[in-house]
Image (cartoon, rainbow, N blue to C red; front, side):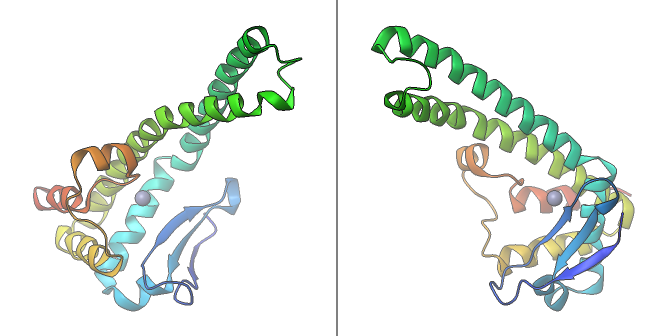
Length: 186
Ligand SMILES: [Zn+2]
């Protein structure tokens, strides 16, 4: 881990954000100035611990593995369908420009299936990073404070509809994350 860096978000947004970035020895944690300026010291510590959780749980590597597998499977399915299209629609080959709409349709359908799966995977990793943050800081109050601030500052939905969370959200609902901290026993 190279270190912890501040990045200039405030020119573009009021929303607070933080992230783990990089590969190998270029890995670093970045905290938005929007977060550093608005959050209390304990809340910043909780967010930092969450990002450290991603680091300890090797989430960048697991994310790359999952995305690579999903891309390879998606392109494989596309190749099967394109070869079927050559026979069925009389394309000259899978590279025939006339087959492009079919290609886009197949990848679009594949994306519709993998989007919720990818989000479910991401929410699982986020829950683990949250658990790490709580265990590392032993400060559920600061965790709740940080989540509440995220909800207010980022205009995040605290309790989205379950179907909306399932399909679209890469992070667990803020309400659930707060509940996790409330029941946390050190
Ligand atoms: Zn996270």
